[in-house]
Image (cartoon, rainbow, N blue to C red; front, side, top):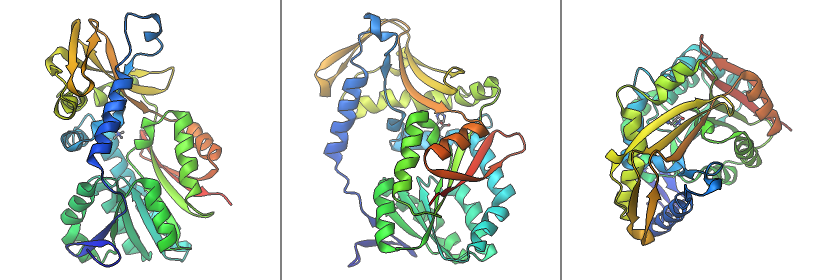
Length: 352
Ligand code: AVJ
């Protein structure tokens, strides 16, 4: 480790701002499971408040691996559609930042395998935009893997990159102190924002905005409203990959909390809720059963066909994107879409 706390990884480096406390995050997971599964389905209010688990817990090592598999499915259009958008509009996006004629912090929240960002990086470099790339991820493993996988490619590109193991806000705060006054462009791609409902999406953007300065930009991926059959195919794929992704949550509870879920006794159920404008993913119990959770020292009861909601994935229209941005104190500069309008990368600006 360097004096400034930075860690070398091949030709690049990263800074770890987030102290990983295994015991604390396990406790958090346990509290979350206790709260989410404590609903008694035989009681009246279970209709309005079913059992729930947050989609945030999908992404352990196994879950992240299955998600990568999902992104390669023909049925799962978001990833390849967003890639096509960046290929189609990357030049225009890059030129916008060139016309600002100042160096940029290109900050990425949750970089994934970096495949999509690659395209944008290439455009920026070829346009002659002066920038340094700061991928931020809460997982040290994710940052290390990204830097390792891209080492040669980025070296040849002449890219300047420094990773941050941090939560989003910690990372942005660090940048504000380390690189004050530098124009920030924040990437939040892949429609992760869809996991928030409208109220929380606005809160999230507002909080981001407090860490940024007037004139800073965001490029945010939104999945668009479309024929529910297309959504259905993407979120309940015929290969059963998304089912495995969802059921992994049960296996994670088995692994980490000593739970005794039999994944064969549950099935994946996904559907579009047009009232909410959201895809919903559920785990449904095939029979009446009780499951012991060791870390809770108690059983959880399931009625036959009782569900646990595990994910919302909200879909947007252009109007909603504009309204949401403005409600959060951001201006919609330009919306970049594919030819089918299935996905949008919205370029936003922090208003003064
Ligand atoms: C990672 C949140 C963008 O909502 O499309 C994929 C997660 N869930 N298939 C999405 C997911 C089911 C994905 N995001």
